[in-house]
Image 1 (cartoon, rainbow, N blue to C red):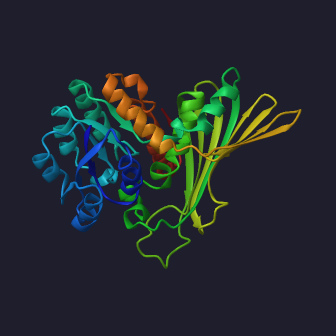
Image 2 (cartoon, rainbow, N blue to C red):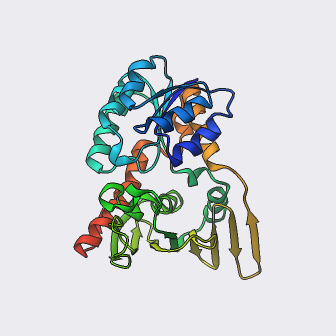
Image 3 (cartoon, rainbow, N blue to C red):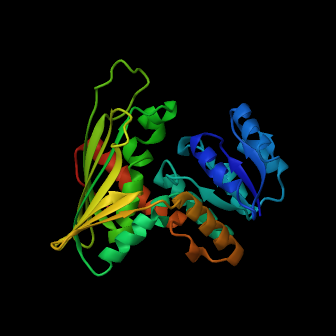
Length: 322
C-alpha cells in the first residue's frame, strides 16, 4: 500500500517509526513546511520530500492513503478535499478539526467520496479500554473522575490556545473520547479555567488549568481536571477513574487497578495502541470495511463538540447543552 505523510513533527515521527516497520506499506512521500524535517524523515525510507501538502499531492499520483499529522489550525482543508476526491483514504490525527463548521463540511465530502477516514483517538484501541469495557459491560457507571497533569508545552503553537484550542481540545480530549467510548453520549458541559501563573513566558497564551463537568445521557456525571502548571514527572500525565456500584476502576494506558469489596486486582499493559489503530486503518482499506475503525471522522466530531463546548463554557461561565 502506497502512503504519504503530511507533517514531520513529533506525532508524525511516532507514526513513522511504526509505519516504516510494516511490510505491507511503502512510504512514497513526506511533506512538511520545514523542508529539512521532511527530508530527514524521507531519507530514512527512500521516499520523496516535499515542502507542502499541495506539492506532495501534485507529484505522488498513486497514493492509497495519507497520514495527516499536522496541527488542526494548519491542516489545509482544501487539500484534504482534493485527497478525498482522488479516493485517497485518510488517517487524521486528533483533534479532527479546529472547528465544527470545518469538520462537518469535511465529513460531508468524505462521505460522498466513500473513503475510509480514521481519527487518532488511540485510547480506544488499548488493552486498558478493552478491560474497562469488560468490567463495565453490564454495569451503570455513576461517576468518572479524570485528570491530565502536564507542564508548559515545549511546542510553540500548543502554548497558544487560539491555535491549538487549549489543553481540553489538544490533549485532554483523549480522556473525553474514552468517556464517550465507555458510557455513551454527553448532554451538557460546564467548565471553568484559571490563568496568569506564568507572565514570564510571553508566548504562553493559554489556561493554567481548567475543571470541566460533563453530564451523560445515561446519567453518568464526569469531572475532568486539566493543567499545564506542573513540571515533567512520570507521576503526572493522564489518569481516569470509573465508579460503578461497589466497583472502582482506576488507571491509564499502562495499568488498571480494580477495587471491589473483596479485593484489589492489578493489571499492567504493554500494548501499542498506535500500532493497533494503524493496523485497523489498513485492514479497513483492504477489506472495504469501515466497521474496523473504532474512531470514524463522524464519531470523532462528537468528541470535538464536547471539548469545544468546554471552551465556550469557560468564556461564558454558562452550562452548554449539547
